[in-house]
Length: 166
Image (cartoon, rainbow, N blue to C red; front, side):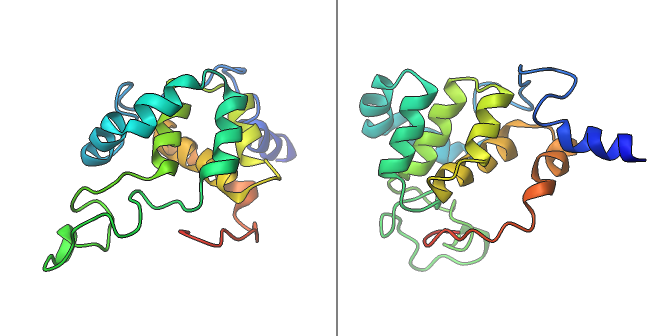
């Protein structure tokens, strides 16, 4: 029994695929909501500033200095008045607005095709809860649902708090 527990814990760090991290789902959209993806791809921030960032470390630094929340839209940029149900502001994807820095950076990470080691570096990062949050979101959007528990298990009792968004 101890052997199988050890395998489950070590799977995200190494697993049977080594450092190569396979992608699950759509390899172009990262499984993002179409409205969010459209807004990311047309965002001047994504097209201009993030285009200049070429390395994992540059993107991590950008997360550290620029991300202030984990919502998909910038506060006050969406028109939700009069909408109800699934189209309202509750789920955050009913209508477009200014897509958030965090979601632009999430998709930028996707374009870098992160390795297991890099993803582990995000989710164990000690400098910013937003770096960790984006690591967990990267896993959520790119990894097979059956593997999510293996990735998240040791972090479920984590008490670090993001002060905005989550």
